[in-house]
Length: 170
Image 1 (tube, rainbow, N blue to C red):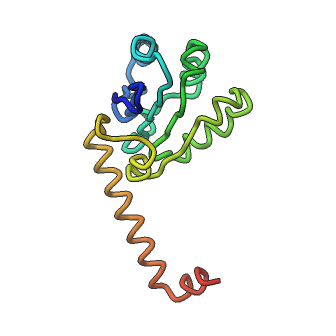
Image 2: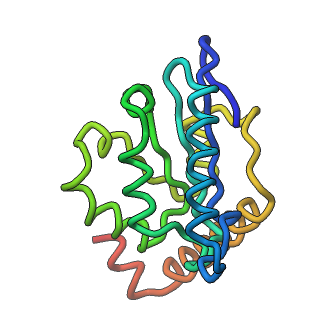
């Protein structure tokens, strides 16, 4: 959690890699109580506009929240909290997250949909929000570094490939 702007608006960071494994026998109970904790914390912290940063990188599929849970969360969030949400930033979005949001888009308000932003790297996130008060877990930083290395390798391999170089010039 951190703050931005003159009014000290909240930046809420949610790291999915720390969510419980869906194979737990008490998974539904844990997730429901986690949601209630998050909402009560939001209600205490948020007086003005706020941003949610959802860190999706380094999260195995079995730890990602399900569609039903996300729908329930959205429906239970107080109108004031939905209204004051300035941006919902998803860092390192997987194809699964993108697909779920694409499928659910017709069922959520267009105002909320317009607040969703995808960010592929922590460098892109730094361009959007001040990071000095935002803690990014080490596992996410490592994931980002590995992903950037792979991207650089892929880009340099493509630029060294004569066929790809000719495609890039067209």
